[in-house]
Amino acid sequence: MDRRSRLALVPAGETPEQPLTIHLEGELLPFGLRGERAAAAMKSLWLRRGTVDVSVLPYDASVIITARKAREQGRHVTLVAQDDNELVRDICRHLLIADEIVTTGPPAPARPGPSLATLARSWIRAVRIHQWAKNALVFLPLLSSHRFGEPALIIEAAIAFLAFGLCASSVYLMNDIIDLADDRHHRLKRKRPFASGALPVQAGLAVFPVLLVAAFAIAAMLLPPLFSLVLAAYYGLTIAYSLQLKRVVALDVIALAMLYTLRVIAGVVALGLTLTFWLLAFATFLFLSLALAKRFAEIHDAIERGHTGKTRGRDYEAADIIMISSLGAASGYQSVLVLALYIREQATMELYTNPEFLWLACPVLLFWITRVWILTQRGQMHEDPVVFAVRDWVSHLSGLVFLLIFLAAS
Image (cartoon, rainbow, N blue to C red; front, side, top):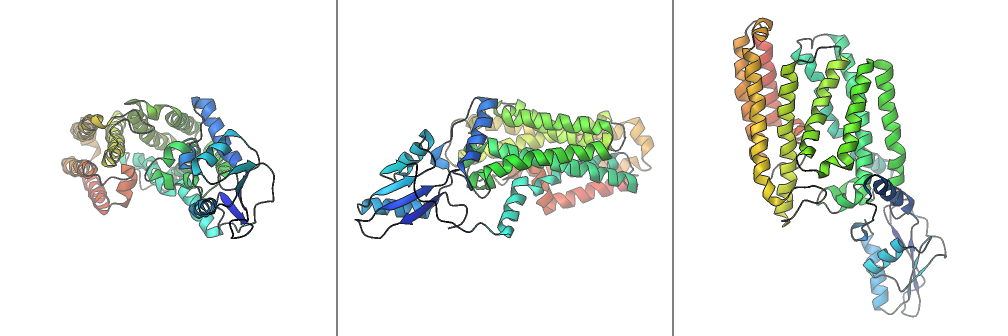
C-alpha cells in the first residue's frame, strides 16, 4: 500500500476466530487528519462552513473490501484511531467496516512513501503550471504599444510573468484546500492532488504562503511599486472570488473577467507604458466572454450528468445556460466591435503604415470567438478557455494570423 492509503490493515489471522485491526491514520489525508481539520477550520472561519463530507473522502478501496469481508466471516474488526471523535465515528458509520473504535493500539505498519517522481508530478499538478499560460497576457501591452522588439522590456515582462505565476499558484493551492468538499463531488476536480489524497493538506497549507511571499518579493525588488499594487489587487480579488464571489451569480464571471484584465494592466505598469481605453475595453469584453464560456461548460457538464438543480458551489441553475450562452457570445462580439472602432480611430490610422490591413483582424477574431462558443455548446470545452487556446492548434494558427496582420500593418 502506498502513502495515499488512509486505512492500514493489521490482520491477526485468516480464521473467523481471529480479529482484524484497522488503523485510521491520525490525519485522514496523506500524512494526517490535522491538515483536513485545518482546511475545515479555515473555511469555517471565513465562510462559516467547516464540515467534512465523509462520503467523498479518498479511502483505500482494498482495505474497505477486506474489512467488510472479515465482518461477513464473523471476525471482530477494530478501528484504531488517535482519538475517538465525531468525524471518526462518521467514517466508521459510513464505511461499515468496524465493530468498535479504540483510541489506543499498535502503531500502523510502516509503508513506503511515494517516489520523488510521483510527488513532483503531483506538485506540478497542484500549482497548475499549465495555468501559467494565462499570465502571458502581461506581454500583450508589448504588442499593442509596438515595442515588442526591445529586449529590456521583454525581460521586465518575463519577471512580471514569473511574479504573477507564483502568486496564482499560491491561490490555486489555497483554493483547492478550501474547496476540498466541493471538488470531491466533481467528476474531474476530485482527481486534483489534495482532493484525491495524492498530496497532504498540511503541506499545501505550508507551501501556499511561501509562494505568495516569493511573488511579492520579486515584484518589490525588480519591478515598479505600482506593479505590486496591481498584484495585491489581483490577490485580493482572487481571495474574494475563492471565498464568496464564485458563489454569487453574475458577480463570479465579472470577477473572472477582471482577473484576466488585471494581468494586462500588470503588464502595462510593469513596463511603464500607458493604459489605453481601447486595450482596457477590448480585454474586458473578450475576457467576460471567456469567463461565461467557462461557466457554461460547468453547467453543461452538470446537466449531462443529470443534475437539474443548482451547480454545486455555484449559484447557477440548469435553466440559466441559455442566458449565459447569449451573454457570452454577445460579449465576445462586443470585443470585435471595440477592435473595429480602434482601427477607425484617427490616432490608430497615424500609428500604422498600412492601417487598412487591420480590418482583416476582425474576421479572424470573429472566427475564433464563434468557434470557442460552438465547441462550448457541444460540450467540448473541459477547461479554462485561455488554457484551451494554448493547447488548440486552430487557436495557435488564428493567433499567428492575427499577429501577422498587425505586423503587416505596422
